[in-house]
Image (cartoon, rainbow, N blue to C red; front, side, top):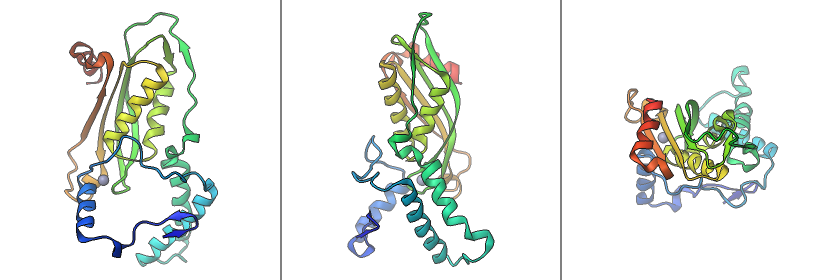
Length: 233
Ligand SMILES: [Zn+2]
């Protein structure tokens, strides 16, 4: 089904009960299918302005369906506000055009130990429920000849976090990108985060947190890994 150049999701009548059971179980258990964010080939054929118009329209329909009175001054601006927030802020990392420009520098001082950037503030959204994931990311690398500005490590984390995400995929995407940019295998990423879909609905557990990690190159060695873990603990 197509509308405004956008494929709408499969209509209910084309899904079997088994399809729906599988989809619901995958979402509630936060399973995912690929390291790449699943994107359609025509993802960027619409401009940001067109996307904002389309999302605002559909979000208004969601609010209408819930029975909210969109003529109320407090609610009137919400559909457009949400649409802008999706496209320009919290899901802006879907668009490769928004990937941060990263300048590298030569490792002039010959610093050969690991560099750890810890406690990077992380805000993302669960792709199964579209509610926030928040916590901290810790990243580390050992220079293979190049170094990177410290704030750029935060920007790379932010870029991949600004997508509908699954924590495991987010962790891997950050790790792979650091390896690619820095030209080294020696990269570690740990993410410690809370999922609002776990705390505010479903199992309603406010205490649990999810930890995921990416260790490659020398970080696979026990000694290097425990040094990193000591710094972030
Ligand atoms: Zn979720």
